[in-house]
Image (cartoon, rainbow, N blue to C red):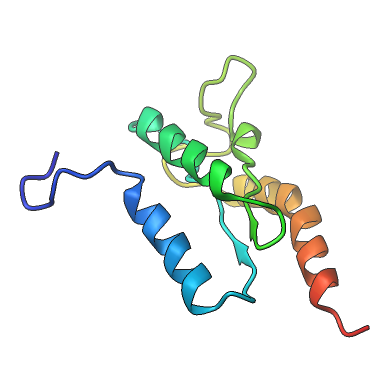
Length: 114
């Protein structure tokens, strides 16, 4: 815990951000991406992602959690896609983009002029 910050659950800023967007622009659609897995801090990230998933309604807030694309069969981080255990490489970004494509297509189609 960082002593300069209040003792708040780490996912709380995410909830506050989502509430702020919903309150200031109620017609907005939000694409909220999961915190990608990384070498350290996966439990905290998983907690934040679970909280975000509960807030998503697939109408105003879409939350496509594509994290399994970055994991190997044993649920360990794929070094082929994230060699430094933190940042996707070119192949990792390509895999992530492929997995996000259906959600982006749906969101863009919903806002297209009829």
